[in-house]
Image (cartoon, rainbow, N blue to C red; front, side, top):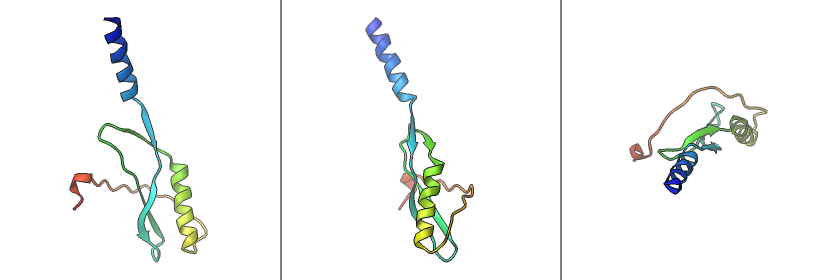
Length: 85
């Protein structure tokens, strides 16, 4: 009985863990000065985004394009993996 309870408690603890997710540059427009960042996650993952790392990624891409900085804006597009052709 104690073994089963410990096993269930362990599964609950593992299932409740948050995954820190890093976004990568996945598109954008050089002429518009927009960098699109994206990430993938599983159905049961609890996500915590590293916004500082995301901004660094955008700044690097902007630097390659000749811009001096990047400014984030809160626009989110959700694309389900099963809806991608």
